[in-house]
Amino acid sequence: MVELSPPQTKRQSLGPYWRALIVCLVLAAAYLALIISLNTETARRSSAPPWYAWIRYPNVNTRAETIFLVLPAIVFAGWTLAIRRLRVKPLRDSLLLPLTCAAVFAMNVTMALTDGSFAAIAKPFDWGGSEYFSDVHSVHGVRSFLHGYVDNLWHYAIHTRTHPPGAVLFLYFVARLVHPGLQAAAWSAVAVTATAVIPFYLLARRIGGSRIAQLALAIYIVTPSLVIYGATSMDGVFLASLLWSMYFLYRLVDQPGFGISLLAGISLAISFSLSYIAVCALSLMLVFGAMELIVDRCKFWPMTLSLALSGMVVIVWFVAIYLLSGFDYLACLRASRFYDHFAMRTNSMTPGRYFDISFCNLIAFLIGIGFPAIVLWWKQITSSLKSLSAWVKPDRFSAAGVICILAFSFAKLFTHETERIWLFFLPPALLGAAAWINRTDEQQQEPLLEWAMVLLFAQTWLMQILLYTIW
Image 1 (cartoon, rainbow, N blue to C red):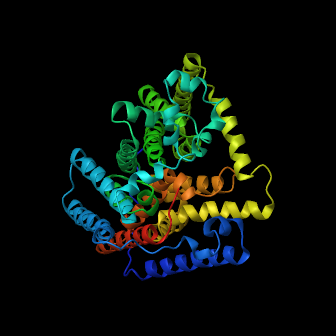
Image 2 (image 1 turned 180 degrees about the vertical axis):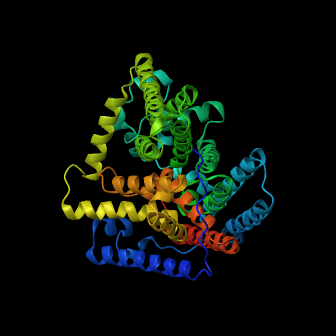
Image 3 (image 1 turned 135 degrees about the horizontal axis):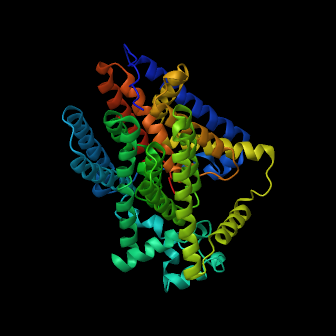
């Protein structure tokens, strides 16, 4: 079915955008003031009293540290110039994607270096008893490691206990195939994270077309959560796998078939091996698929059969692992959930604690998107709600994102840190923001895009240098 592009909405000035941005900042400040005044658990965990304990001064003790503070701005200036040129003369994907991966890598690394040295890249991976890397020494063979994973779970690091074995095995294979040691592990994770922009762009182009995909690409590189955790977190590795899963699932929804079902199933199996969070990405695409069926009911049986085939691939994957190594994925899931409930005290929650954590999950994720992008996304959502009959794919994808984000925020499955854990939920927001820019008058698109990029970069840079953005 061929869909017409939505009509452009003329905007005579950027005044409405600035007013909405100010309202957004005021609401965020009011929320922070409220939880601090009520001394909620979120306020206590985030501030480790007093409330300003997480605010820090940038490292400017030496000339090198001062230069490190400026490097992200140089990368951003180069990216802005590249976007200007790309909007006038687009590149082939074979050139655009390597360029974008390099830009994402450079932005993530230089932003991490604002902590004062190259040690900032490896430091987050070297917290003994907390991070996956500390358990790589436990892998004396893949089969034996998998066989004893559930029984030894309580002996592993905190993050390892709440995840399947894929993250530790990723670092183990890096040590075997690239180079052993902390530096190789950290830089390999940064490199894999940078490649996540490839499935993001392919997904955006399929859903919104080349123009919206390029707009989304422009703001992807300066999205706070993606940058701040792009060089200091294994969640970036998870993001790359999850975005490939979402891309193949979209292909399955859009054009069901045998081959794409196999690819979707394999990518989902890998994602589930890395993190249980894959169920959230799967839910997002299933909700989007349901919306697509409302538009074209003829897809019901082809889509259902293709999804069933993908599900069978995932089942066969873990059954094969069980037969070869004795690793029981469901037993691992139960053990991880038990530990998480024990550590986070989520078996029983008072209504006050439930709403405190749930709203924190939602607001932390929204702050990670970036206030300038939130305003654009909000405008796209409210505009599309006024004319449901004229919805196109970006509108439906954004709506699916809103439904899933709200559902999982209040599902009692997460206790804070969603700005890092939910990186895969960013595509609906970024595509929604790009769709709104694309709907504005052409004379306003350029300044609106560049102002959004500048403000997103400013928010990212300020959060990085002034806050203890640990994970």
